[in-house]
Length: 627
Ligand SMILES: Nc1ncnc2c1ncn2[C@@H]1O[C@H](COP(=O)(O)OP(=O)(O)OP(=O)(O)O)[C@@H](O)[C@H]1O
Image (cartoon, rainbow, N blue to C red; front, side, top):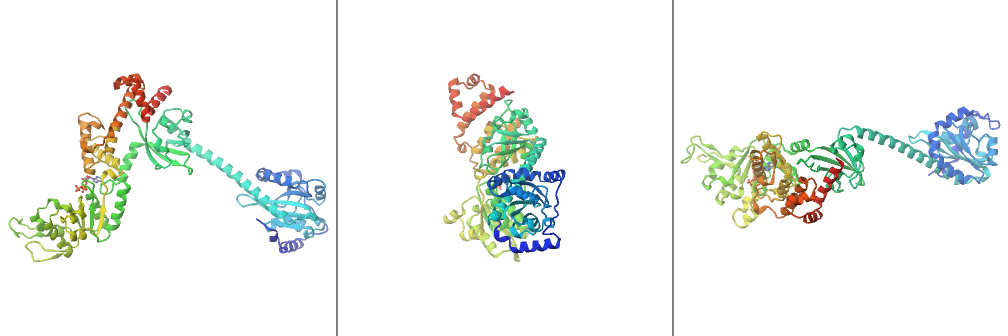
């Protein structure tokens, strides 16, 4: 805020010098006055300002009404456009042309608050004899510049009164009022722009071919475009005000803590078909309004599967595994030997391939399955042999795995199965990094990166003296723990991926899982991990296609080990069966109870017990009424 001190004498002194230079006569002023039309034009140019500042100027005037002060607004050229004042001071002021239409620029009136503030572009007070012209010495004037929201000087807000009533705080009050006028003008402009922007958004919203729905926090549709209304199969206006849950299971979608991208499923349309859409939600900062973008799930799923398929053809769409891969990429650049621990079928070999790829080593990745090498052959396997080195040796001799992996990576799979005697042989070569073929006397230096994998707990194996501690430490310079499938979040990404592969094999566009099958897959423990998932889905897809001629796998086709199927499926099964019966009976509960072989009362009890069932029933009722 401006303080009185800022209006130093130097402002007045320079103004006086300007006034003299401009040739202003202090005794006889040549006033410049505007005619009615010209004045009206200038007032029109500040129309927005006067409209916005009207309440502020009114308030200011109500404070000054009973005093000997008046309010004036000039434009940027110094013409007074409006004045508010009362008899007797207003009459006195008129005599010196302190009134609408007169020009108070310095070149006309010499030093005065309006003219000087226009030059100085800051608040100015001119008191009594500080005025350059003698006839104005009875005045005390306080002026503050007015700026547009873009920073353009619009004019001056001035408060003038009798010099005897000069008060040190008046300039501060005028400055504050001028700032309030500017803020109000900015606010009005912003509101105007916002309205335009909203209108523009509305037009774009309507014309967008991408289905778009806006929801309030309780899931009620507040806006919808034509593309989305087409999906909901209702006229656009009929969708507004309806809960989106009429069409979609969308509880998760509206959860404020849920992820921003959600897959939502259209309620079954009672012809046995379920339409799936991917919904991308955008929430406002207060998480109260949601905008939902819909796209067909099928194409998006394919896209997603492609995105998550790693270069090597492995699927990783789980934060835990991504973390492992990030670590792998960093460690792969070093020389450290890596031990991958994970349950059987959890994808250890894939990780070994990733390590090799990320290491940038130019040599090959050679795999040894340690469980498959008989104790007696370990040396020939690792070091190779010269021709005729021993009875049974091949005629051509053989290159050992270490030599073959020179410049690359040696992957020792199932290292936990390696017999103790073989462990000693392996340790030696790892320490010396030199191999000598059996039957040869020429040692060869090898440059090999070691990656080992096991599904055993090697620490326990060491404690139980089944694995050499020194070999363990040599192999485990860095340890990677791969999560089992049941702890991964990409179960369905993997399932989609395997199903796509089988579909391609069989020559189908797609193979999908029905609702119950998905539930069963989700609750199963997957002791055989990804390998088991792939096998189970392949078998099920074959059965669905070749026995039932269906592209949708049903729960009967899914053969899982009973020991690992949890009991909680029983409840799901009951819900699913009741829903199916209600759907088949098209919402007629007597018919549904008959189909289920239970009484209507029992069915009602079940409906009250399980909210999922009542929701489906509501949906059927709604559809039957509105179709
Ligand atoms: N991320 C993945 N993406 C796609 N397929 C995978 C993935 N991980 C594993 N698989 C599949 O699962 C099978 C088992 O994986 P892998 O052989 O790497 O497991 P493992 O942990 O080495 O098993 P084991 O301990 O029995 O040697 C592979 O043949 C592969 O087809």
